[in-house]
Length: 266
Image (cartoon, rainbow, N blue to C red; front, side, top):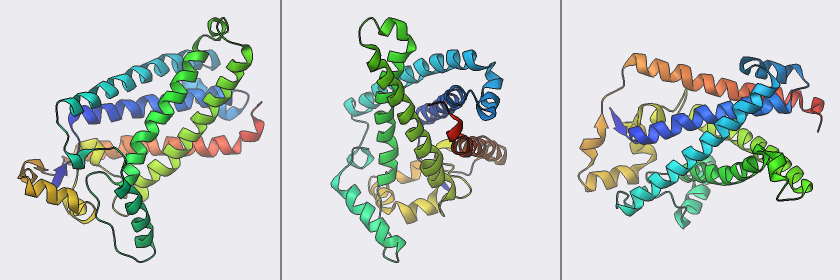
């Protein structure tokens, strides 16, 4: 038995974010490592250096539009009262307490009882906002540097380029190492967390990890309405193929980037 965690709209947002983020990672690194074989291999499917830039710009604009749509969607949920207190992704004092309780559990203590969103899930969510604001702003500045130079000094464009690169590397490092590690390598997730793909999670695991959420649903009489059957095996297999394919690509980019870092003409 499984329990529904995400709506079709939320799954669509996540899938589009995966597709655009991976595309930006590949095309961005293809240009950054353009003088290396690693970068040239990454750029080949897009038609080379110049085409990578064109794709990077178009997908970058798409990400900004997607981000704006998500903000509107989130505000709509808040304004129409669709979210209960426990459904909020706003960081609270309990998240810091849960973080340290979780550390104690790793050393032999008692597992903290999480609500719908654990502290690391909230961090994942808000990290996207930080990244989109910085990458989006610098990306717009660099979209047409000649036009941008009419309104600011060239040195500011150089700073924007470095901020764009460094934030992109930070974002890829976090997503490919930390986020992918959480959804793949955790005991409760291995070999891959299916929650965002099928929109539901293993009910027994949720009772163990998020008992406060389960208790709130039961007290409100909404638990039975969220329980669903296992996904069809073919859909589960497809999600593993796509999900683990994305993880493999991320790991490849990290390893290739580190190996070839000394060859980048900074």
